[in-house]
Length: 469
Image 1 (cartoon, rainbow, N blue to C red):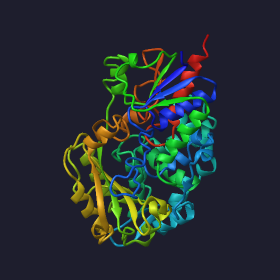
Image 2: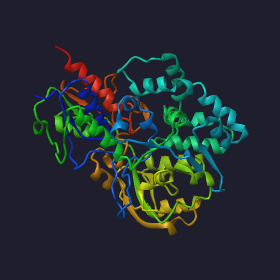
Image 3: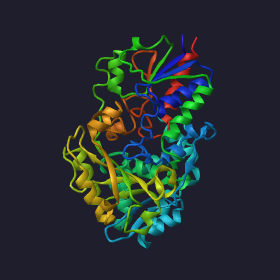
Image 4: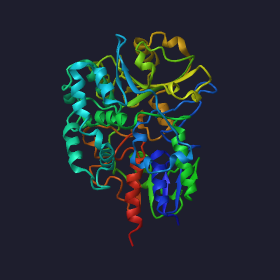
C-alpha cells in the first residue's frame, strides 16, 4: 500500500508529492493529461518553433516561494531569467510607470508627489520579506508565524480594500500601477484584503524580481517531476480519475483539483456547495514578426506589461467581469513578452506574446478584436506584427484544465473571506470530512499562482496524519 496518492500533476500536486517523498513516504501521482504541468505548461500553440505558455508565464511568486527555494530545482534544469524591468505600465500619452527591482526607480516613475508615499509603503516590509513571505504563504495554521509583529503590521495595511490604499497616492500614475497589481487576482478593488495582494506583488518584485523560466513555464513542472522521480516517486499520465476506486490503495489521497471535482470523486456530496468561482479570462497567444511596438520605451524592456489607461478604467473592467456579467469594452490586460530575455522561445527575430483579459465566468464570446484595439492604444501597429494567434475563452481553458471552472484560472474567487479562508471557513483547509482525503490546489491558501505553497502546506497536514500511530 502506498503512503500517498496525489491526483493532479500541477505545481501544487507535484510539490505535495515531493515534500512527502523527501520525508520517506511512498508516493504516486496520477494526471489526466498526457504531460505534467497543470497551469505551468509550454506548448507550440501557433506556429512551429513558437513556444507558448497556455496559462502562467511570469513567476514573481515562484522565485519567491519558500517551497521552491528549499528544493534543488536548478539541478533539474530550472533557470530563472530576469528582464531588465520586472513590469511596466504604459499610458496613452507614451509615458509609463514601472515596477523595478529598485524601490527608488519605481518611486521615481510615479513622480515627486508620490515617490515618498511609495517608499514609506514598502520600506517597513522589504527588509523582512523572506520571513513575511513564509508567514503570509503558510497561513492559516500550518506553522506559527516567525515574525507575528511584522505580519500584523502587514495585515493592518493590506486588509483594507485596495481602493482605500489608492487614496494614499495623489497622482494617477501610482494609482494605476497599483490597481493593476491588484487586478492580477481578478478581484474588485473594493474587496477586503485586496491591498495585501498589490503589496505582495510589489514586494516580490523588489525582493527577487518577476522572472520567466528559460524555455517556458514547463521547465518548473519538469524540474519538480524529475526531482520526484529521483526521490522514488512515480508519475502516471493519461490517467483520468473519476472516483476513489480508480486509484490504488493508499493511506492518504491528495487532490490538486477544484473542490467541485474533489467532492464528486471522493463522494463528499455538497460539502463544497458554498465555494465560489471567480470570473473567467479570455487568453490570446501570439506569434509575432518582431517585438511589440510599444510607444513607451519602458514597456519594451519589461517582461510583464499591464494594460489599462487609469485606475478608473481598470476598476470598471473588473466590475464588468465580476459583478455585471459582461465583457468590458476596454479590458484590463496582463501581457508577458518572454522574448525580451529568452530568445529561445521563438525563431530568430520573432517573438511570442501572451495576453489575457477578464470576462464573466463561462462567457462564450470572442474578445479578440476588443483586446487588440486596446493593445493598439499603447502599441500602434501591433496588429501588423501578428503572424498567428491562438485564442482560448473560458470553455477552452476549462477543457484544457478542469481546475479552471468557468475559465477561472485561480480555481476560486479571490474576494470576500475567500481571499484567505478557502475552500471552507476553516483553520484547517487542507483536510476534508474523509480522514484520508486532502486538497492541495489553488483553491486552498495561499491561493492562485505557480508557487507550490498550497501543495507544501497540504503535505504538512498529510505527513502529520501519516505519522500518527
